[in-house]
Image (cartoon, rainbow, N blue to C red; front, side, top):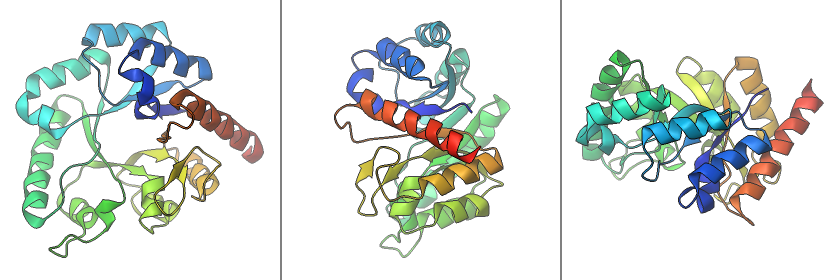
Length: 243
């Protein structure tokens, strides 16, 4: 099995040393990385870093604003680093007006990106499952009114009171990657194996479905690299246990 990591997990070092962060993730054993910013590096520099460490870019968490402000430049950058999955890490769904506006943008850019060979995806937190003041459930609106692919953050779904395994099955036709993640129901995140989220069940479902798994561990306790190591070891233990 190959695993990816969302580089927000090691945000304590990426901003000041992105090359070092990538090197360390490769040394731990991760094969894929999901970027959360490029910190001023050129696409050529990022591509070189990936190649030097034998890593692939599985996707990025990138903003809707970049697409609105400079679609052509943004697409060129992502093509140059080999990224085909442009994932929105969240948008403003706070009210009907914002939901309407942002879903319209998502539909527009999904079509435009598809023509460039890039898939537009959406990553949830817990708030998308909760009603706005207008009484709308943003995730339901997203599902009904767009065809964007879904990166289910299984921990945030759990924190919202959802069964992430059932959600994966329900949305399997749109699901293209998951964040495998742990924590408690009170929104306190933890490294894999240290919380109460159904990580083992999520893992088994992802294997069954053939869905890529990207680790995210957000608490930097004691630091991002240590958490990334804990998570990787846990996945390898699960792999042995279940095979």
